[in-house]
Image (cartoon, rainbow, N blue to C red; front, side, top):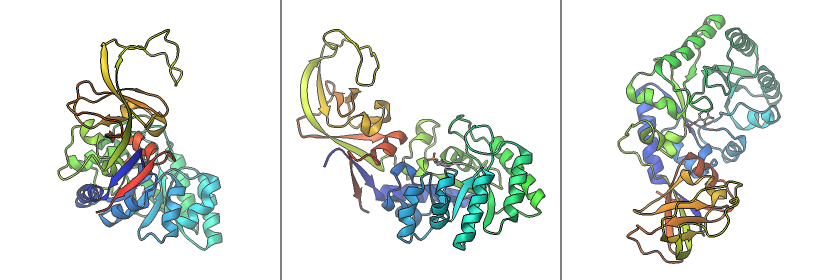
Length: 360
Ligand SMILES: *Cc1c(COP(=O)(O)O)cnc(C)c1O
């Protein structure tokens, strides 16, 4: 059925091999982040087989089914846990990123009840201003308290950049993380096992060969699964990778010549905006059965094929200008789209969309 998202596992495997291979050569282990595919289990399996050392998600509910199915690699929760999910966190995952001492105490308590040890990575705030401990005294105090816990193992420290504050993970920024790690090491009198330097936006340090030596862990989702941002926004090319693991397919439900300017008094569109329209005369359009509830914003998807342009969309319809396309469109035809991160995240999670795995 349409609309649907197709996931090409062969391309995903190639991307994983290339990206994790470069990381491994630089002495960095990789948690493959599957949240953008809504935790798709086939993606998780292929990423684990092709080089990811662990599988991670921001949503525990995406990791639980993998754990229940006996997933072979370690599972890591990368959104700092909610207090309320600690029992399941301990039951189903091996490790989590953390910044709150009350949550860490609860993890220790719960792990004790379950007869387990849960691994934590303490998040350090470096200025992106999402999760993490900013104050040196505080992160040292948390590390010391965690170190004394019986059922919590402090694996190391991590940071997050390029999310809220859009801060670039430069070599200097990541050296600040190493400095924080070394302060904790001095306070604990031992080396930390892991220093987690961020996500896809930190991968250029691997590509450029200027990653601080002690950073030995990254959590990569976009760079493996979508593989667009680093070359479209930062100009990197990684040989042997694909940017079309995911394809959005939708069906044409109307093809007509129409004026390009709406006719009548312009009020508000379906999303409470008052848009303006350019009059380009009569143009040929195709209407596809796919809408903003599937992909959020029209700038998150791009129609494949020359001369096809998105004019606009409402919840369940997307309007394409096909006047300049060499292709003849008919009702019932299928149009393919590339998707950016937000579109993949939504499209793979919405009930109004089918998902089709293209096996290897
Ligand atoms: C989503 C996320 C990642 C992965 O980000 P990508 O840009 O997809 O590589 C890494 N760490 C944390 C904490 C995240 O929330």
